[in-house]
Length: 397
Image: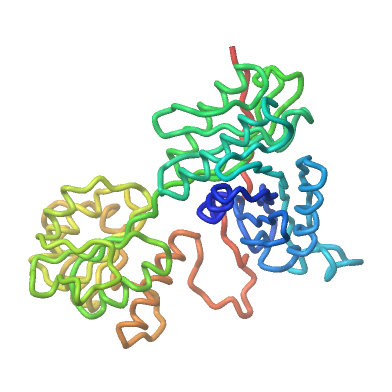
């Protein structure tokens, strides 16, 4: 749902009633991952996608039905030999989708359900707060009940990084406490997944399954070296939804004119700038400076950081020389093995744009667990996503 938060937030501000279908779990070769959403308003306008086309029509109808009945529903779609091209996923995957209505009476006032004063009024207000936070780029997570007591289905809880929260899942206070704790942990990791809270933990008389969606700021890509290859890489980084920073110690090259697509342009020595940053495990560092006086002090620091990717441009001879320099100043073999150099996959790239594509392909393969090998004739999975993770929460005092 949070992947279309900006559009849904506008719908709420405009007073539009809608139903939103969210991918809860996937199995096999499913085209979209948990959190992907499709929404349909009362006029029949649709935004988003849950399957890349396979089951959009059926989900669209379920959204319209939810608008009529006011009731949320959890549906499963999968491959069917008898009816594969009608509703099933012809690629062979299975997806679970949760559909819930959000009713809006006046602009800016979501009232998901009955008359004013109904308990679900506060639930719709929570959803509105979640969408507003996500659309403005704030870090926040929403936990929604997708399986459990019928009267609690769709109930939502907004959790912020500091542990504060808005709304309630509507059951026992123990359920809220457990949900806040677990949702905050998932938000810290930037994860969207499902988790099950046992009957004793929920205090609702039966287990409760939550869908937790995390909205975190865009991951960072820092490109060191304001060269022509960097300009192409900045454009590809933006296409992949990274927050892109270009850093170079030479002010004549690190300019807005040369890098109009960059989010930030920093004139500083690369290693000094890196020392000033708080980076997370999603950050990618691309070292294109191709000069030992910049590369070595920068990589000495970068390879000790818990970032997702560190790549450095240069020939194989340059790489061997740089590797020895790093070894001489004390880097371990484990740290050196983290370095992707020469940077990028072997695509035969020559132009800056082709080189940027090869670098981006390696970043994606590293992130998703891909091999970089052609899919034609291969027997490996097309999608290397983390399998569905349903964590069962134990006893809660």
